[in-house]
Length: 155
Image (cartoon, rainbow, N blue to C red; front, side, top):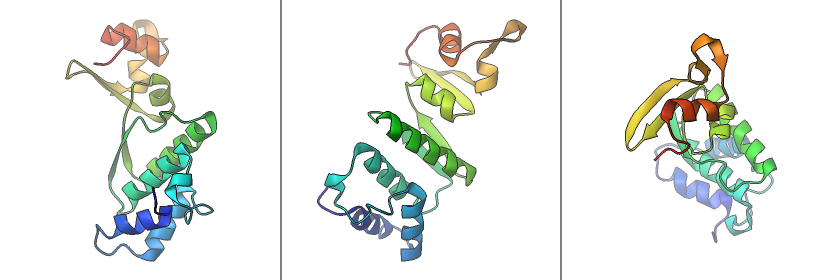
């Protein structure tokens, strides 16, 4: 919190071999923090902190990015920014696993759903298949979840 966003990224980069200043600057641009990267993180909005966290997670070019409730607590503008960032990262070839109770978010971001109930996988399908029931009737993701999983909450 007392360090700048840039200082936080430098510390993260030091945990890996051969992370160049060019890569740090590339990641800053990817997450859209160019104008505020020298500011102290304590001055960042929640959305900016989320983007900094994603920058730290992708600095070493991972094949898989795991995000837990990535838009939780964000305002509408922040949600849109994070959604767009996640979609852009996916287009760049990073596989992204999102853990979320927010089915609207899953519907907006994902092409596949895995539902877990009491520690067991109870559904594993594409969003398209998951929301289609017999007779090719389309349901909302919420309706399909209630129908197929049997509760409106994942334990």
